[in-house]
Length: 327
Image 1 (tube, rainbow, N blue to C red):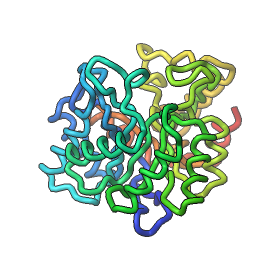
Image 2 (cartoon, one colour):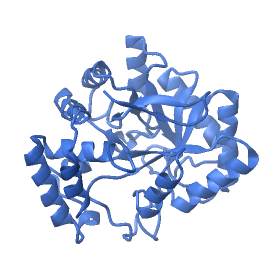
Image 3 (cartoon, rainbow, N blue to C red):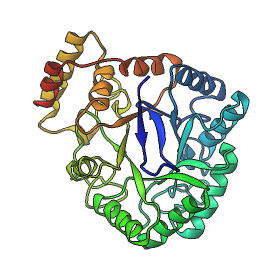
């Protein structure tokens, strides 16, 4: 396994594996026994960075979420896991009542909602301090300053370690960070966005915004990570839900654009020359990129996590990387 440091404050920064394990469906589509087996194999291979959210996976059960955090808490207790494994969770997008959703009835990012959500996550995960806490989606009803101050207070109290943000516009991220700098409090240092080798269009309206897909790592966000060296990018859905390799998992409309055919051909070419799978080439390309990302991979079986783990040791040649970057 390989590792990198996220965060800059010596009191809160952490060394994490360059491959993160997503636990979204643990406790719903993936039963606890299988989830434990995947987690055990990931840790055995040196993995140290596990991701969840307080709303995972409400859409599978009609609940308000929390199943994934509960499984992770059970695993931590059963295995005697301490702070050697970094657990990241998110808040703000859990529905307030069963049968509703995050678009019209989310918990939001008010100070009181944050406090309540953090208490719930800590209890389910069995953690005194949350290692990494993300603001999951924007809350247009709440001023950014209120959210920033509450997140900063949680770090100052020792209830949270590192702060992160997901699915916000780049201007919202920078404005929140500017508020934190001006007030001398902890700000966002970890960004979690959808990112992969095949780029996603950003002009299509989404559930969260008529202006486009705000959860995608576009040029504005990647440029921010390149320029602001204290930022780390965690990339969710790097393998596009299996669409790179499975005919029954078609690419979304957001990937239907001019570069798709050429980049797909380049991927297959490099997979052949390297002797790796297409998925492994995607992950290796991301980990070793000039603007590196920490791929956040899901798995519903030990075999799936094995394939992703093998990508960590895949070293693309300069020629292979150049071929991938040229299209």
